Image (cartoon, rainbow, N blue to C red; front, side, top):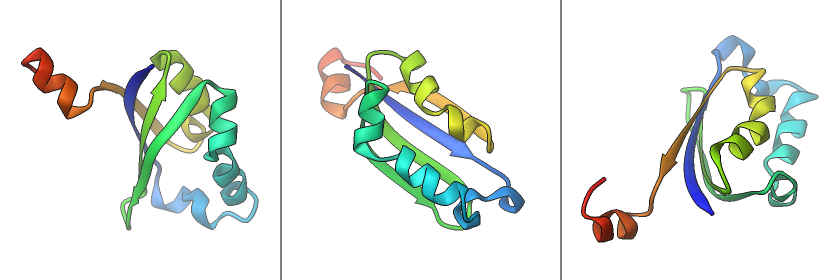
Length: 96
C-alpha cells in the first residue's frame, strides 16, 4: 500500500457542510467501511476551519484508486492527490 495526501477545496458559497442532503452523504462516503470498498484506508482527516479545505491521509494501491474514491468531492471543488511517505521511510532513503 502506498500513502497519499489529498487536498479538497471548494468555494464558500458551495460548502457542502451546510447542505441538508449532501453533508450526510459525504460523511457516509468518508466512513472507513465505504473507503474500504474503493481499496482505500483512511489514516487521518482534517478540515481547516473557515478555509473550506479538507485534507485526507490515505493508503491505497495507487493514485487512481484515490481519485476514484474522491470523485464525489471533485464535483464540489478541486481535488489534488500527492504521493507521500512516512518520515521514517524518508530518512531511511536519505531524501524527501
